[in-house]
Length: 184
Image (cartoon, rainbow, N blue to C red):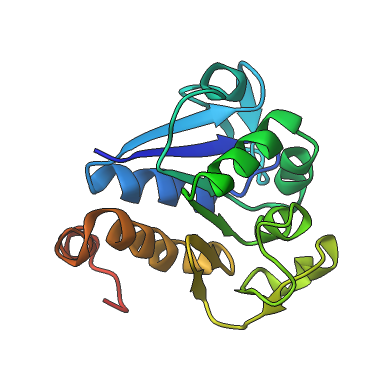
């Protein structure tokens, strides 16, 4: 079973993180939410959450996919976390999958994981937070082992795309069918 890490920082976008965790778990994946600190993590709309573990506790563990939720303040907090940035570089060099939604693709742009000519998508209002890459207005963009998505409104499409990458089309279809999404 593939292992997935979803880091949670104060200010993360609720819809994005919770949708990702939920949909990936419905697919039977082992999903670990990891807070940048112990205790309650306050999301962008003031909801309060407890992560499964802390990022420091899982920093040396192996994951098949690391998914970064957005939220402007959450992304700023993730960008400031050296443990996360080191994990991203290690996973990228090992050829592991990395994904980011909303403002979080800017973390990948700033760390060189998305290079100058690599296509990506992100929340348009966040583009000034990063440098590099070739912006696309598509809702989900795959480039090699990096997948990006635009916003909370694309969270289900993004999560199902990740399920397809890790589990195949039949699992993706099975999960999507139970959700009764209007686009599926």
